[in-house]
Image: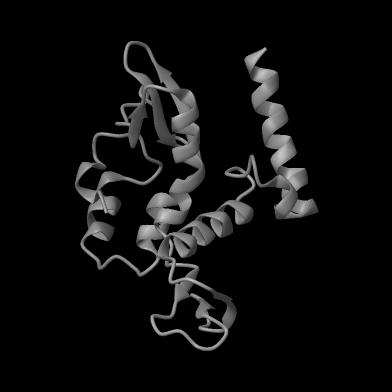
Length: 166
């Protein structure tokens, strides 16, 4: 939590309220809220492409969460950042069973599949894919896997972005 630097930035809540609330313990979902976004990419002349949360910008006095030379890397970071604050969507059992290494859902512990090899990279990639299919804004390459509702909402976002660049 970055509560100590809130006073110098524009915020709808008063400084005294933010100071009082900062004295409390962060709830378990605090990390997810910090990473959830939504994120936007802003060109910074001479530096690259900065990543900001919605409502934040350089002009408003905010420091970027990250800066990349290439816009495509900033967009990739914006797509995956919401998942970095979430608990793992899947877990891999360390001991194999006859079907392989059990893959279980992170939220309920239900076995959802088996992997032939103990592949932690596969489990991390599944987490990222799970996050991408849940976030229409993060969705670009996985639209087909996301389903009709996410496809419709992602299409609105993509249309808005492409019409602004013309």
